Length: 347
Image (tube, rainbow, N blue to C red; front, side, top):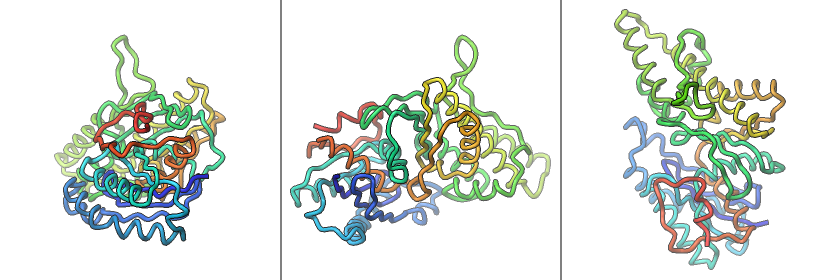
C-alpha cells in the first residue's frame, strides 16, 4: 500500500491530504467561498493568491493530523489539470518542491480522475468496470471507468455544466454564491411541479435526441424568461421556493434518465457519482430510486468528498504509484485536458 501526500488547488479550495491506498489519514480543506462570495463567483487571480497564502499551513496540518513523518510518505501528488492555470501552478510547484526536497516521486493528477476516485474512499471494495456520473461546476460527464487511467467518455454537456447552471440560476434569483446548497435548501420547501421547464435534450440531425448528452444553457434561459414573465405579471413576492424546486427537479430528472439509460445500454450494473452536484438531495433521491427500480447499484460519496478535496487526489495517486506510474518533474499545468489523456501525465 502506498502513502501519498496530495495537494488540490485547481479552483477555490486549498486542500492537502495524506492517503494510504484507499484510507484517508487526514484531509484538510481551506475554503475560499467567503472570499469569492462578494464577487458572485471565483476570481482566478484572487484564488491563486489565496492558495499561496494558505498552502503551507494546510500541508503542515495534513501531515500533523495524519501523524506521519516524511519517512512514511511514498510520493507527493498535485492536481495539474484541468482548472485555473494560476491556481494549478501553486499546487504543482509546491508538490514538485516537496518531492524534490524529500527525494520522493511526484505525480500530476487529473482533477476529474480525482472525482472518480472519491467513491473509493467510502466504497473500498469498488472495482471497475462501472459508470461514473461526474457532475460539478465545470463538468457534466458520463464516463465508462475501465481501469486506473482507462476511461471512455460516453456523454457530456454541450454547454454549461450542471453546477454552473445552479450558480447562474442562484445569481438570477439573487440567492448568492455558491448556488447549489441554497437552491437545494429552498427546493425542499417548494413545489417541484409548479413550473414546467425544458430538460435540455440534444436533437440529432436524423431525428430524435442524443441518449447521453445534455444541455443546461436552454434551461438557464428558460428560468430567466420565467422570472421576467412573473415580474411582468406583477407577481410579488416571487415564488423563489417553487422556482428552485422546479429547476432542481428538472436537472435531477434529466441526469437520472440519461445515466440509467447509459448504464443499461453498456451493461454496467454499478453507477458511481462524483463532483459537487453529487451532494444535491434531489439528484440523490431521483437516481437512487430509478436505479433500485432497474436493479442497479448507485454509489454516492460522503458529502465531504463531493466538493473539491485532496483526499480524492491522493487516492488516485496512490493507485497510480502502486502501478509504477510517476510524472516527470518537467510536467506543466493545463486549463483543459481530456480524461482520455490521463496516462500522458506519467513517464
